[in-house]
Length: 254
Length: 64
Image 1: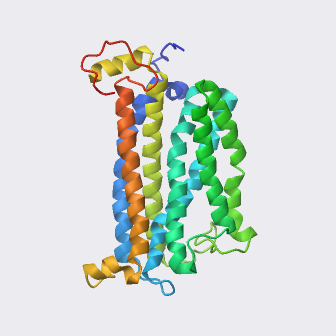
Image 2: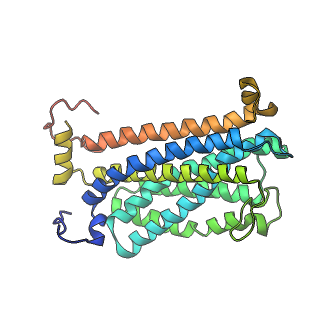
Image 3: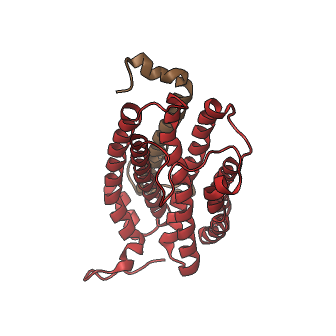
């Protein structure tokens, strides 16, 4: 799999599709995303706990929303991005695409788990139950299983290229679940409440609450980018460990 | 400012257990993911892998 290095002159879009270039560039981007995540997270927590007022109906427990909603959004969003890279990998057979899909999966699974966990802890005081086979909760549980299935299938196949393709197909098939989650509160009138904000409509929550939720969402977003890029960098090194550039890297780090 | 005192803050209107379990587990799992990722990247950087032992070339390769 040895590859000549791309030409150094001029801008070349696909340069960053080469693993060494990705490794270098992502290494410079990750600290930026990490710092942004910390700053936004601090600001979001301050807004969420000290600026946003108590909720008239739910009291203080509604503040779980500021982790629940960002985690749930990121769980859905990461799945779409993962399926996109899986599709790119299947169609164009580019190495970095499948690595990015694999880099996203565990972070997406974490977000899906956190949305279920925080939802359960919010559901108990708000609705009187930790869990119900409600349309949105059930489809989010399926999302978690899809992430876990992607990772399990990938690690079960030894040949990494075949693992990429099989897991990529699973990711693509599972993407139909994302609109089901998103529209579940409209399609089925079950326990979970409707959206707090919908594009093109006025939000149904107070401005400081909305601000806290959005800032926390951006914090989660930046964190997820940093985590997925770091995992993708590690996967690049693991897959290319016999190449000259990775050996050189290991040599200079010793 | 929403809180008269720290104990009022931690109490969260009687729902402190729910709120802090949600935030605590979120924070703990995020920190855990960061630590696991750092360890994995460090391992990969040293060129070692679980699947194959590289030739005894690197000095002081104690990193598993």
